[in-house]
Length: 114
Length: 113
Image 1 (cartoon, rainbow over the protein chains, first blue to last red):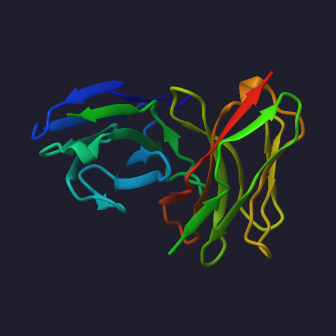
Image 2 (image 1 turned 60 degrees about the vertical axis):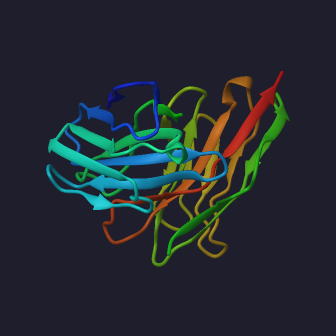
């Protein structure tokens, strides 16, 4: 079974702090994604990566950056957390080996910025 | 651009009732279509999929048919159970080998005994 794990289920940070969210997948997937999930807005793509050291902006990249130094790990960084970044963050991965690119999701990190 | 529109929830049904969650999409070409489900406290998981017109995806008693003429992919189940209570997301992946998936806003389903 594909497993995508995220470093924390719940996180509370203060405004202005630098925040790291970590995601690890164990299926050797090439593609990895970071989404945020908000009520009424569904899932919005923040960043994604096709390969190690590669990254592409999604629909809402402002205020975020990412890092992918190893194939299995994709980190989301909030350089200076703000209250409007309070949200559920979901990581996902998919393989380029199939045409469907089915995405596998982690359990999510609920981040609260106070 | 691509977009997915789902019926707003929450949807509340009694056990054994018939379920329909509407989904329509806008996309160029021939997208692949998906339904994902998110159970409480968990991430999303793929429920079913369809890759071309008139395909029917099915899993766990749920079904959805890819209707290109109406650009729809409605989710149905004949008899829901309490354990089906979750949030359901319709999604599409554009044709052309592009890995991005566009999600709808989600529909919360609550099934009461």
